[in-house]
Amino acid sequence: MSSAPAGDVFAELVGQEHAVEQLRAAAADAPAARAGQHSQAMTHAWLITGPPGSGRSTAALAFAAALVCPQGGCGYCAECESVRHSTHPDVEHIVPESVTYSVDETRDLIHRASLAPSRSPWHVFVLEDADRLNPESANALLKSIEEPTPGTVWILCAPSTEDVLPTIRSRCRHLMLATPSTSDVISALVTTLNVDPAMAAFAARAAQGHIGRARALATDESARLRRQDVLRIPMQLKDLGSCLVLASELVDTVTADVASICDPLDARELASLRAAYGEGAEGRGLGTVERRAKGVVKALEDRQKKRRRRVVRDQLDRAIVDLVALYRDVLVVQLGAQSTLVNDEMRPQIERLAAQSSPEDTLRRVDALERTRHLLEANVSPLLAFESLTVSLKDPSLA
Image 1 (cartoon, rainbow, N blue to C red):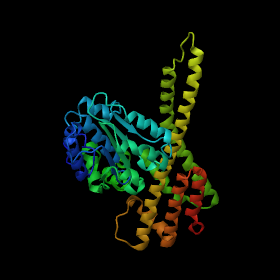
Image 2: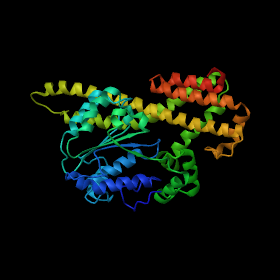
Image 3: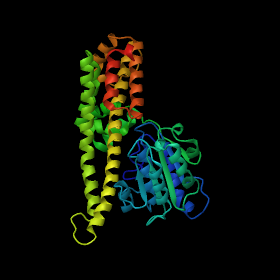
Image 4: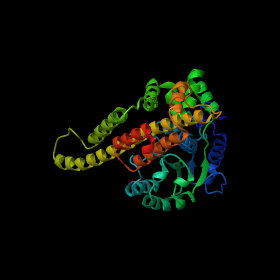
């Protein structure tokens, strides 16, 4: 685990001591850099990479808090608290609501980045999923990264440097995070969340180093049940009918889960927007206000639809990751490898699956899972993609 003291903004970074050391040094050097002095540790553009769950956004937001905190990231002052709750006026946390960043979204970011910070030395932009910048939006952002407004800091997050366009990554300082070890994740769950050690061990193993996923599995029974339902699918594929039914049930369940997440958020956003345009007010000029509001509401609803599609895709991708891990375990058993099973609690079912097919079939099934992921990225209908997947899992010769 990180050696960050309790309350420190870097305390939630698990197994990233080297990265924490660099970010601390940069935060300590930031006042001198802001005053125009030469700094080796601090720079205005960062690219934080690492596998899913390694803590990219956690590291980025912790660094942002350290930059705006008078004490370099104490973790308990008003500045740190406001960053934690996404209310700090000088720290913007941007998460794409659709598959890619549009040029218009990027230009809006550039405009905001040209504004001076309101109450802190720095105006910090944490840009999630920088790999979703297409060539047009990346080129629009490039000039702002090359020649930033004084006091502006860009922190881009992506899975790897190869996922970011060369023109962007060459102008950023790269900070690479590693997948936390199972022991680090277990320790974090036990010490910070008071999770039972046996549950922590299960969650850490099942999450495969994804600290956020491990927290969810350790503390949320519904997350464990959903994962269990996904892992049962290969054992229930009996014929074509069962393939289609299971695909439909999975997509329907994910869609319902996403609705429970997005519906309240959509309603709050819409109510807030209508209130801002004076819904319920009376008097002259109200008709003009309502006409203007109609266009803005339509734009908000379009963004909400894009966000919902993205959340559905991300949830389905999580199911694919869990199934890949299951077939990895099947392959371990088939090859007699001396490796720990990710899903050791399912060893009897895994051994039955291993006995029913060959290693070549297992690899074909893994290929089918990866192909499904690419189909989702290409905006193929989730139901069609998963119907094709379940048929390929039932009969890998069709893959």
